[in-house]
Amino acid sequence: MSVPGNLVHTITLPLRWGDMDAYGHANNTVYFRFFEEARIVWLASLEVGGPEEPTGPVIIKTSATFLKELTHPANVVVKTYADKAGNTSLDSYHLLTDADSGEVYAEGYAKIVWFDRSARASTALPDALRAVAAR
Image 1 (cartoon, helix red, strand yellow):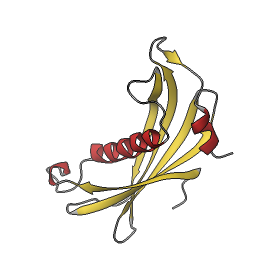
Image 2: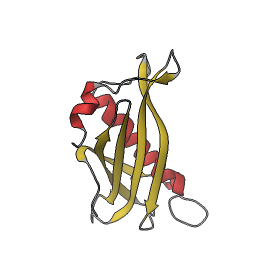
Image 3: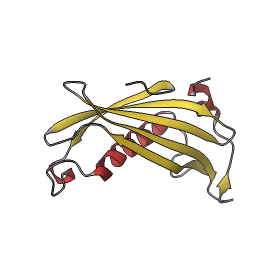
């Protein structure tokens, strides 16, 4: 699998029993929660966009391609990639794999827009994000 951008963060997360649905596999929303957790931990590691700060990330577009059924028990690795940066936005991608076998469960995408919480409008992307984006 080829994911665009620069690898910026890796996190390992457990699939919980409660993440399973009536069909006996991880509900599709769980993949988005894994992507979200990876993205938030990554941004926190850069010390940008925390809830107490005047600006932060909002997601304006997201998608996932489900490639392999995910069932409990499992630990997954979520790799986050930063791709093209605009004036106020950044394309991010995720690769979700099995922690033991490396098999790919899903690929994800999220367009991050930097948001001024007082003005309720987009604002300039922080330099820390621009610096890690693919050129």
